Image (cartoon, rainbow, N blue to C red):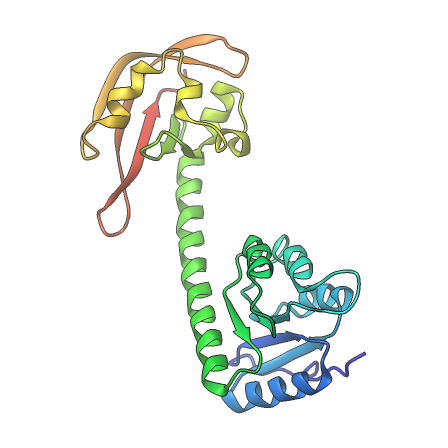
Length: 253
């Protein structure tokens, strides 16, 4: 078992990195480099169970994860378990440029890879870009949550969907009227909510900047019961003004 370092008093201004690696010499090398670069080594781990425990306990800002860990679970399986409960950037360390391995690793959506042996510049660049991307992701997630909060506070049905009709957001009023939970609705298309698919084809295929109204659009709830609503569909724009989907608004009753 590797000796832990960096588990005492921490410097809140430094980014904290958990090193998951079973080669003691590589751990010492990485610790030295991270300290030199101004990062804090939050802790180390050399197997899956230890990595899971310390990721949960230490809540690091980033994890350097060796793909080929000893034991019943490798680094990819360990990373998968971590990202299921924590939104933390993971960078894989590997000595093997194995396409099959990289394909498996993609499932965990890693923030980068480092091929051993790596130099100071490669280590610094992949860490800095990963931390920057993670910060941007957090801003995006915050903005999305703000949108969800607004949608869910509305009394009207509010559904957002892309140009193919795939549902993106499905507010609380829509859940109640259609009898369909948001998580399931996001796996569906707008076409599954309509009694006749052609009723929305113009709105899906037409001018993305246009606003559409329909006085009696026929829908179906999860039990197949038909009902009609007056609806309004408007462009869904991002912060740059680009149209990336549509918003449907209808009375809940």
